Length: 132
Ligand code: ZN
Image 1: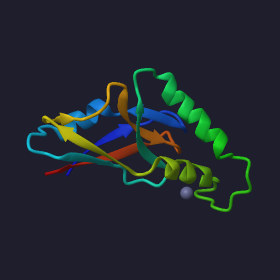
Image 2 (image 1 turned 135 degrees about the vertical axis):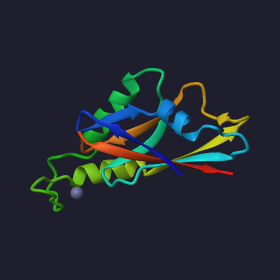
Image 3 (image 1 turned 30 degrees about the vertical axis):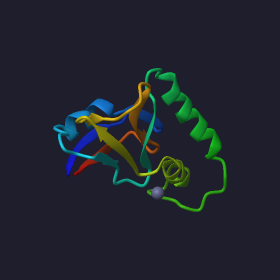
């Protein structure tokens, strides 16, 4: 298993990690897939459009609206109600499985891999496991 870290700057922030995953995963000769996983409860990973950076910002806005800070949350951590950040992360999930074709990640033309921060800024770890 390979890993790398990402430092986020905002509370909610989708970070394009496609090239970091490519670098961590190489070489992919003989591999069938790459599993990208984040060992966190308030961050996730997803695959979506990365050609237009506005899509990532729209994800941040949408998830902040879908899961409101204003609801009467019970979970308190270090004096802060961060329950909504756990739920936003759960919507994105903790992993993405990318097939390998001809020795490269078989991502679509518009697809990129995003680390999804919901309780930043923080340093996050991403694990990349190559499946043979
Ligand atoms: Zn918490």
